[in-house]
Each structure stands twice: as C-alpha cells, then as structure tokens.
Image (cartoon, rainbow, N blue to C red):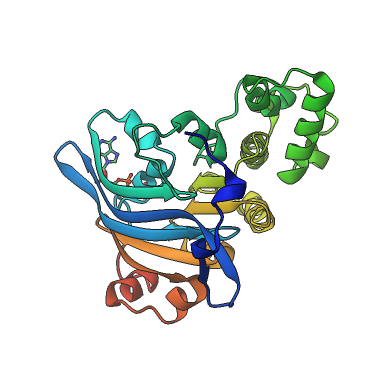
Length: 273
Ligand SMILES: Nc1ncnc2c1ncn2[C@@H]1O[C@H](COP(=O)(O)OP(=O)(O)OP(=O)(O)O)[C@@H](O)[C@H]1O
C-alpha cells in the first residue's frame, strides 16, 4: 500500500469551516481508545485535523495529549504494553491497518519534541541527515535542501556562515528551529509538535510561534501545549482533553471566548490544572 496525496483529496473530504473555506481533513480519528497495559489513557476520541491549520491540544498534565500526538505517527507503539481500538484515518487510509506503510507515514509526518534533540554533528549534517537516509547523495542537491529548510525554519541568516560548526554551539531556541529545519528537510505533510517551546526563553518562544504561523501555509500542524495563551495565539482550532477524553473541540476563538462545556471554562479560566 502506498500513499498518494494527489488522489486522495476528494470533494467529500471537504468540510465547511466557520470561515466558509473548504478544507480537507488530514487526520480523521474515529472512536479511538488506547490502553497502557490495564490503564486506559485515551477514551473514545473523535477528532478531525484540517489541512493548513494549526490545531492545538490543551489540557492538564496526564490527560493524554502526548499519547494522542504519538498515536498519530504510531510512535506510541514503541511502548510494548500499548493497545489501541478504533481508527485513525490519515489521508483516508487507516494507519492501524496491518499493511499500512508505517515508515512512509513517519516520513510524511514529522515530529518536534519538547527539548531540541539535535545530533552531535554540524548544522549542515543535522539537516542533510534525513534526505541522505532517503537516498539523496548529490552534494549540490543536499546544499539546496539544507538552505531551503533552514530558510523555512527562519534560522538561515543566523547560521549561514557556520553551517559546518557543531549544532551544540547554537542556543536552545536556535537548536529548536534547527530541529524544525531537520523536519522540513524530509518534506513532511504534517508536523507534530510536543510542547516545542516549553524549554525556551520568551524571545525564542516568540520566534517559534511566528514560525508556526508561517509554516501553516505549507503544512498542517498539531501542537501540544500547556500554555493556553500560546494555543490562543498560534492555533486555528483547539481540542481540550481531560482524563483521556476530548471535552471540547472547536475554533480556537470560540473555545476561549464562549466555551460550551463548564469543564473547559473552568480550565481556561485557571480553576484547575
Ligand atoms: N509509557 C507509558 N507507560 C504507561 N503509562 C503511560 C506511559 N506514557 C503515558 N502514560 C500514562 O498515560 C496517561 C496520559 O499521559 P500523557 O503523557 O499522554 O499525558 P499528557 O497530557 O501529555 O501529560 P503532560 O502534560 O504531563 O505531558 C497518564 O496517566 C500517563 O501516566
């Protein structure tokens, strides 16, 4: 089974949003349940992720945000006790299908973690690593990919004169943008971000938030964040998770201004969590 982006965006994928712009659904999660051993961490999740939008996932510690994110690229299965029920359709194909090409999924869906996880290599090597693994050997092509990815991650100007220096010499905020560049280098469709700014200072956080805003033109982004102001600033839609369930999912403006569920209201007004 192979994924064909061009063929799978059909009209019946499209849904009306509040802006009356029809957008296609990238991920459609249907009745998803997930257990770690005996403990149920995700309960009957139904959630649609739309193309070229930023979707924020908020909720108190332990509510299942990271678990859900890691389910989207099936990384959660690295935990041996994990069991899932239900479906996640990515571009209309069920990622839990036994013939589903998981490796291909992980090249279509990039991930940025809480702490920048740069490799102990040069800046250039960090970005060229993924494309090289995918068989690109030509130096000029790699140079082009490195430049384009670093520009895409808004860090090119800061590093263009030191591409062959070790990436550990960069600041935390620069390292996180380098990780985003590394993710862009494999030309993903979706970028998953797990609290990408929680280890960064306010100025670096702002840069990454501006970058997220720019990147949604070309990618669909799902961001887990503890920071509600950040969710309000960067996202189009927000899902509020509580105890493994989605309590509310709607346009970010609506969720923060007129939440429908009392539990959402209590959380966003700081009454718990
Ligand atoms: N590897 C694991 N093995 C067993 N249980 C786990 C594992 N990872 C997470 N859990 C449990 O699953 C539940 C959801 O955890 P998860 O990390 O998804 O929550 P979270 O909302 O991302 O939390 P935080 O905001 O603190 O990162 C928690 O009860 C947690 O203890």
